[in-house]
Image 1 (tube, rainbow, N blue to C red):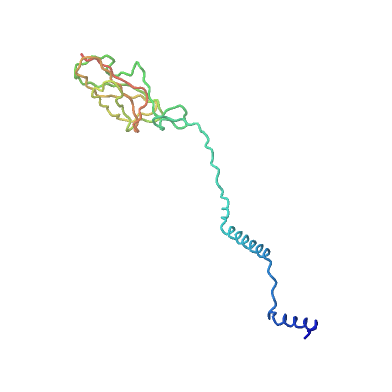
Image 2 (image 1 turned 90 degrees about the horizontal axis):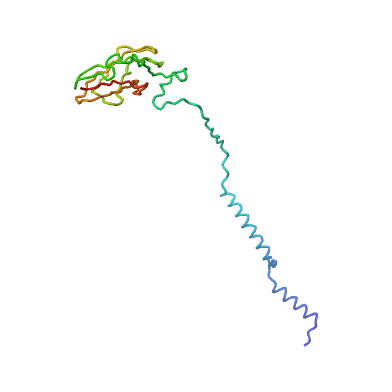
Length: 204
């Protein structure tokens, strides 16, 4: 039996309709477009993450500029700052002077002494500082032979410009020879001042 061409075409169309899926076929996705989209998403997420962990800069703080110290001329004493008289540049609070002709009130230089002889040496000195010599001012041994020297305390304050007789009790050494004992004034802080004064004897 011969089948006509229109009939064949009709049968093919019917088969295609019967085999076709009930739901429409979705178009095949573009792989390149998907990759591009995914890459954009990853970059966006990384950017957000980096922003979250990037420390914000601390607000500027006002840091004071250190001042450069300026040198000021100061008159410094190695021993006692109270030595300088206030308001009188170059004048010391504690100082003394003496006249070589009148300093030895007793026991002139090279006075002969017996071994072990006791004696009192008295000097006349002047307070040439601006401070009064009161309690705590005294003579202390400086150098030479001490000869058991003991300072005799002042009996009254010595004002600036006043002269005073100041004494030390001594005992001559037992050995024969010449002996010198030097003493110096000291203030209540234990700081010596002025020239040393001395006694000089010959033990025979």
